[in-house]
Amino acid sequence: MRSFSNTYIFVFSLIMVTIVAVLLSFVSVQLKPRQEMNVQIEKKQDVLRSVGKAEKVAEAADKNSYIDEEFGKYITDSYVVDYQGNRVEADAFEVMLNLAAENRKPREERNYPVFVYSENGGEKKYVVPVRGKGLWGPIWGYVALEGDLNTIAGAVFDHKGETPGLGAEISTGWFQAPFTGKTIFDENGKFVSIEVAKGGADPSSKHQVDAISGGTITSKALEEMLIDCMEGYVAHFKELSKLKS
Image 1 (cartoon, rainbow, N blue to C red):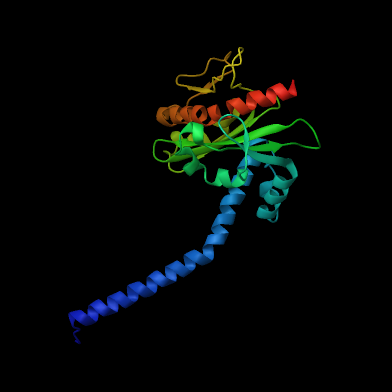
Image 2: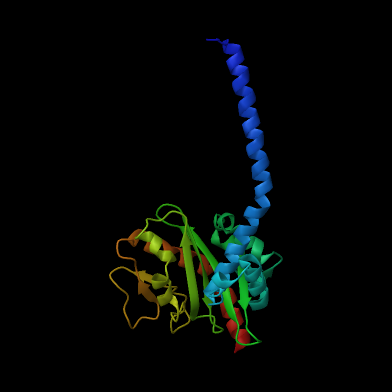
């Protein structure tokens, strides 16, 4: 049996590691544009889902093209505002893609993207992305508001690693559906957001939905996410409401 010196083994291992590293880097570079495109398509789909315009995606022959077309058709405007409600020079989609970095800033220094939905020139809806920390990793979502900038028209949420059957239920329809029709301001115009109530929401409350049984930590994390992210839009929403009245 042939034996090899330690130097030979070391050099051979170094060469193999280098070759593998180069190959992995090449594959990563080649796949990066496709990965970025998939992320963008996923986010466009979630924005459409929040306003109920993604039901036919599964039927489309080319899902990516269909989502792109629907997004361009129904999202008629997008822009970014600051904490004071002023528009700023920034791309809403880029800010949304980098929301994790944005949320590491103090709330008063963040940029807040807004996506405007309209169908056939009808009443506008306003979609805002939200992001926070769940039990095991990031959670995020998209909340659509009716033209009154108070009533929730739809909401979708997702997560990276919440517990299946418990916190992961935030991505299911049964949890998301009750948000529709709830309001984020009280009768006096004060921002109150939405409470995810452990033990069940008060049926008469316009600001509560049921928490997930056994998923209290994720439920409360989602509640905190909504408060943290949507509070930054309050000045803008109130200014828009004045312009509409």
